[in-house]
Image (cartoon, rainbow, N blue to C red; front, side):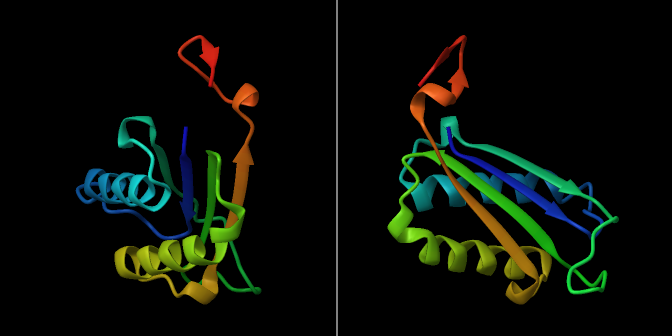
Length: 114
């Protein structure tokens, strides 16, 4: 049910990719208190991005989940920005994050909804 889409404009080392995805999955499960078996991570590189008129390292993240705590988005933003800086060297000032709280009946899985 939690989904973290990460798009960066820098190349991703193919050998490091599985480890980066595992790190993100574990982080999302821990942050949201959700079972990791439901966490989905999508990590992509798109060189056709700019932020503030430059193509310096940047990231766009989308965190969607059922029951996303509105009162914790500042904390979640800090944690995700730290992850992006520690993992990819992307300055938090070059990271945008969209938070989305999905309603159970609008989130499908296993031929049904949550």
